[in-house]
Image (cartoon, rainbow, N blue to C red):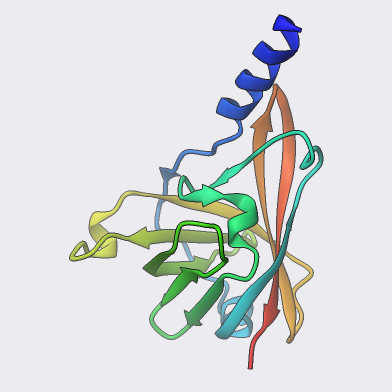
Length: 158
């Protein structure tokens, strides 16, 4: 029982991805323009979701991102997002983002009064299954010593 508790605690603490240094790179304008607009995260899925709690973007439980609203403005790589789910801490932030030539989505949450170019840390996720009405962002994190994909399913909002 003690061993199971210890493994569970280690997995919980290992299930958070910290921000990584984000370097400027060339942008995939076609992918980026396709993401322009208002979106909602329909689901957040990952293997072991019934056993492990994931803190997404060092902000909140991953399930709190379901129903969150995102606005992406492609001509200046800016936008905003808000966590809106009941029973979760509310959070809203301006963001800077872009899709690089490697199909990676680079995201920075902007603190009040801080310019994006001053922030050296951000999150890098992979873009997948992009259509006019939906796309996925996939993060790869370590859960209990095993690399696991967390899939954020975005659907276009009206």
